[in-house]
Image (spheres, rainbow, N blue to C red):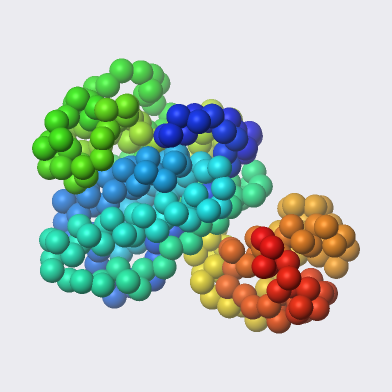
Length: 305
């Protein structure tokens, strides 16, 4: 697959972008989407915030208390900014509707770079698998991007109402935003829900699976969801003991450089350390023990990331 691709971003620039998994988690005791209007608002928030923060949505899945989105972004910073903007914007919706302030304050946003073909394919499948794990038929679950995938001529024409043609009042009513959307290709269906194929880069996922739906379904069905949950959700939020952290870091080293962490050059360690700090919950002492450098050197590398 072509993991890093050239795309026209929402701001009109043409840049090389790569995939990131953005998760919004850690609200086990709070239901954020209490009815269809909330689910619809979250999907629209994801779409609007992607445009604001100059990233492209590949696929998404929204469930009652968390959401997952894969985006194409030019940088880690852009992917993280997108996640934070979704949190901020949906918090405003939630607060207005339920008069419950600071409910999303505890929601944790993480953006993980999908830095290998295996990681990207499995993360894309894992996002959509959330519908299955919530007891829903993935073909019928309305709040994920599955309906956009492997559909002939999905990108041609607009089968519903064009968002670009909406008045300002309609945008506020239907999209919950005052943003000018005159340049977008998004479409609404007869229930005024966003049509996933009109705003998702479903072609990226399809080419990741060699444009073969059977390959995608095989990956989806054969996936170990516990493993992906650990890699994408738990590891970035839970500090691992040294032995498990070393194992995880060594896997990354093998993906990036085809060699053990202990054999990396200083140049390669310098590239790897900021990535580890961004994507895993760790500390300077633990990084020092794992990569075999002094704490002062680790701190210096992180200060110049």
